[in-house]
Length: 289
Length: 273
Image (cartoon, each protein chain N blue to C red):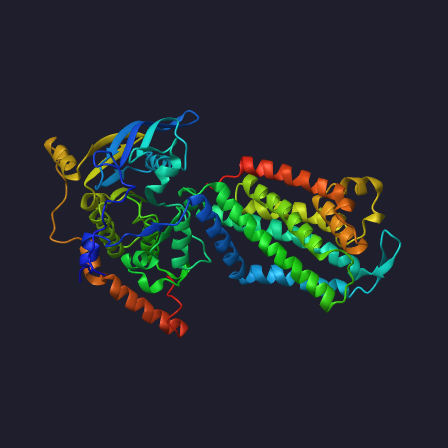
């Protein structure tokens, strides 16, 4: 497929000055427990923005409020100027999501899953292009259970694009992936920015945030502890006199892992197809892992 | 070896991924019907259970070769009374079974949560699920009726279209119960006990398989209010006695009340995520 950056002239896109995501005074309480304590941040159009924090920091709650899965106690959240509460349908149309605790239908093929989800947005997705983008073009007729973990994550990424969204929200997209599969996913996420899309992603992996994100917000105990570019945050820490207590090595164990096992999608596809052929005697059924 | 890269991946996805086809409400509704019908015929166990169960039951119960007396005093083979009961019972099992178990599983696995994150209204998705089950109920009714009459030789009097309408309408009431079960359940594990709770009294006291005339008065009165009793009585009135809509007004009213109550509570409590 030739490189053809997606045009950003879609009528669904807002004017350049409008933030892709604006969160103001967002609060969420459960009884007396304050999960999110009045946070403010904006995500600019076209950037990859990371939401970081330990478990229980309020990331998931914030994400669920942004996509309308959970009502907020107070505050305002807008996606490209559309309020997620008062203009929920419009806001949801503008955002593509990959959720952690969600799944797809077991009985549908990959192409059918995408068509079904697309219909839920009133859209007919180009399933060939979407599956091709995540290098699952030859798996359109496969079921989800036939895919490996990495392939499932890539499929979930493709599924987040069924509505051709200007804003994509990825909730810990690389959790559970091996280092090679994670790096493959990073490339795909970067490609979204290449389209002119905005990406909001949450992650536990600091390396991932450092490599991918233009800016990050670090949440802790329901508040935003810091928000800036990864480099600036590192500089600020170093300026306080912080010094990392490690020996700098030319390579890490992760480098060894990738060196020994790392391969591209094409290699992976060929290997799994060969395995599937060997296991089932035909190429249609997939390798399950 | 480093991770393989491509120009496409490094710069952009190189695609415009979708085009508009209509409102999320309508497109999602239509897609849900197609999706759910596929779920039915692609699941061998569901297909075998839903379509095979009526045939197996007919085969087994028809082997009890005895006569029964209809309310009008006429003596007929048990099969003639059994077949209407089975048509009613199938409406219940399709409604309860296929909705409660499937929807509950999809909810627990987070499939409904993913759909909830799209702009499709809950009513469009649930409406699509309902219509798909009504299609299945109609199909099962036709198979049961066809095999009972043409394979086993049952003699039914009533209007076939009215019978079909009753079975599908009855299934709609039980679909509402199925959604209600999902709405009030905390997890997938809560569904089987709830299913048994509805199934057992219906199976024993509705008149679908066993004659209600021998029940003690109080039990006859209490179980006369079961939704399957209303449905069975209506189907038997039409199928055995050639009754019309006017003859089954009371049963239809009973079903309508159950349906309205179940729908109201399900609508209030049901959440996709």
